[in-house]
Each structure stands twice: as structure tokens, then as C-alpha cells.
Length: 90
Image 1 (cartoon, one colour):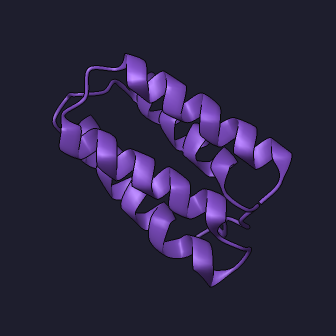
Image 2 (cartoon, rainbow, N blue to C red; image 1 turned 90 degrees about the vertical axis):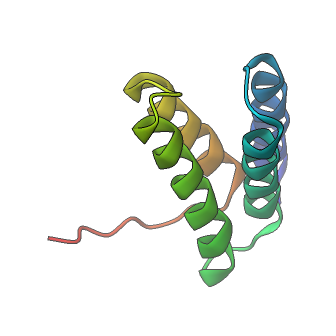
């Protein structure tokens, strides 16, 4: 963890507090953000990132989020964790 990641985590929690989310969704996103914050580079970040992605994509599918807010939320979650190298699946 570093100061930049901690600031991203605190900012995300403050923002999520303003959103009208179900308690379960709020808890899932906060838990994933905390997991990312506390993880080290490598496989340790995969599980909280997968949980966060699943939650955000589910919200998008249910029209609880638009694409712009879903993209912002994923970026904000990623900022809480270690840098990850995204690979091209193609």
C-alpha cells in the first residue's frame, strides 16, 4: 500500500457513500476496494479485482449504472490496487 492508493481508496469510499446503492452492493464494492488496497502486486490482487468487476458488470447489465459511471467505477477500483498489467486476449 502507498499514499496514492490509500487516497484513491478513501476517495472511492466517499463517492460510494453518495450513491444510492443497496447495502449488499455497497459492501461488495467496499470490500473489493479494501482487498485491492491491501493486496500486493501479482495474484493477490486478482480475487478482489474479479469480485469488483463482477459487481460492476452486474450493475451495468441491470441498468443500475450507465457505461460512463461503470467505467469510472472500475478505474477508481483499479486505482486502489497495485499496478496490474492487462494483457490482450486476442
